[in-house]
Image (tube, rainbow, N blue to C red):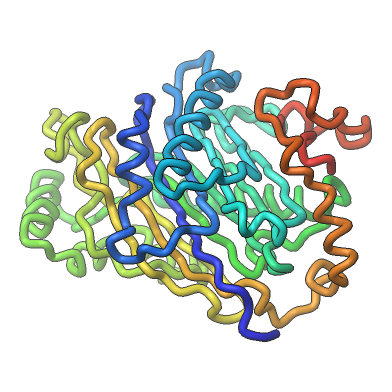
Amino acid sequence: GGGGARVRLWVGTWNVNGKVCSEALLSEWFRNGAQHEPAVPDIYSIGFQEFVDLTARNVLSDDVSRRKECAARVEAVLTSLHGERYVAVGMEQCVGVLLMVYVHPRLVSAVTHVRADVIKCGFGVGDARAGNKGGTAVRMAVHGSQLCLINAHLPAGASHADERNDTFDEIVAGLQKAYGERLRGGPFPSPLEHDLCVFAGDLNYRLEPGGAKEEQNQVVRDAVAQGKWGKLLQIDQLRAQQRAGLAFQGFAEASIDFQPTYKYDAGTSRYDSSEKQRVPSYCDRVLWLEPQGAACKPVAYVACQGVLVSDHKPVTALLDWSAGSSQRTSAESAASPAQQAAEASLIDFDAIDLDGDASAPPPLPSAESAFADEFDLSELFGF
């Protein structure tokens, strides 16, 4: 392994509470963090939760038109911010959990082996699970290094850390099973064995100061007013689960220098004033795992306080990743440049058409079509 190619990752997570995101709001979110790092991102991993309201109808079928409208707004904002047309390499939706991955045109030739997956963890059993909770993932090779991007919505409820841990395990296990199959370009390593696995979303872990509910609220809101983030992180459930080895084992997170991103009265920057009086919490997080070392450095980790439409604030992590510096020789990274070029041609980015018109490649052969209903964009990648 050498020094590797520098890749700037913009990873965002936002629970939009079923609200429509205007271009102005998206622009404010996408620019947030640029004050710390003006470099233009190579990859945008844009994760929404509650992209649609969790009504019965929505839980059973995805609203394609709404996703297309959002993608058009996202693309317009990226173009206006950077003067370049970013390329959509992966887009996957599981009811309200929507992941959009865009790559800067200068990096497209270095991206191969893209696949998108959905892991449903909602009510029901087996393949009939509903998608009211779950994860979406896009994995790819970048300069031969394996990158896995996961966007998830873990179960809510202040005391339900164990359910969140179980859903984390379920998403990882579901992806591991999917990646292990000889389908759509696979097999690939388990998500936790990629060179870099970034796990973001409304992870829903809460702050737990102990004591009665009113006292908890007072303790947390006082600490927020005084900007004592370190004090809050000592009572953060996610950090406690990590220390106990119960979830996100080995994952890193940038230092949190912002106030809790949940729960606000929608349309304001005021914490929950309803009778539920929810304790403010760091529900919205971006973590990453590197099993083989330390090629990823956090550059910024920020919440976008100015965006008021939802009861959550958007969160962004800017990561600096040295791709291609992998120590291992997987079949992919060992491929010759000619082989890689041949495999890159599997993804004809120009033919990717999110409306599925005639320019799309033919559908998958039947052996692989079991996935087609769930992975509606997979056929566009020709795997």
